[in-house]
Length: 296
Image 1 (cartoon, rainbow, N blue to C red):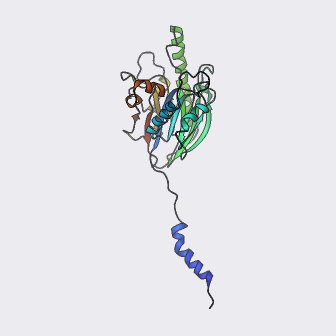
Image 2: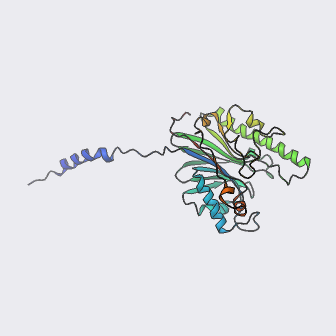
Image 3: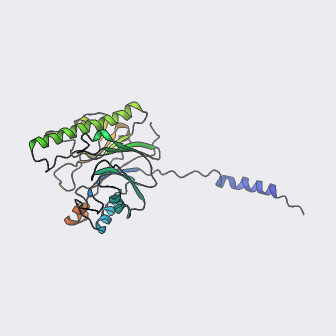
């Protein structure tokens, strides 16, 4: 008896092709979760770190990062990748990219390996004085229908080391100039490309509600952006506003999911001596919709 193999194969393909040939790839429609975290003086354990940390303390930093559940975190005050790797060893789902021209306090990003991230490198104009300031770091991110630019920044502080009126004035002037450079960057994208979804994320060392000697006017006066963190209070000094911020362009702000903003309060999670080894800042995290049609 002759067996007609070819017709049998064709019939089988017709039956099963809808099951296998037209399978659609699963698209992650969960919100894009963006955070910022200044991990104070995160050193590599070599030489004299400003804050010395034990292996257990690097693990606690990783635990705080896990608590954010963030897709991407803007980082500040990271010495180098060797320092970051001491945290990443406890975060198998994440990877990181850093600037290299911030000396012992580089900025960058930590993000989930499943997230689509394109590194665009350092943004030098933020470093008004390269010997005293850090450049920004820029990435382009895509999740679902949402693609956006993010820049991680760490503006000049006015700290206890500014021991004279002249030094304090100089630091404020520098921060005003950095604010203008950051606004120029936003304008350069939204005015010259079709891309309209832009974020500035990081430690601005000031807050938008400051009335005496404000330094962020270039950002606070612009109708093109919104400080999503303007009303949040510090986890460490609850009488003050936060200096860590997430700033969104008008288009990006339209995707903000109201009520998702959170501060991971490490001071309520750990006793004082332990919290201080993690950081003197608390991570801030919020979410953005990725299901709306791409608007740029």
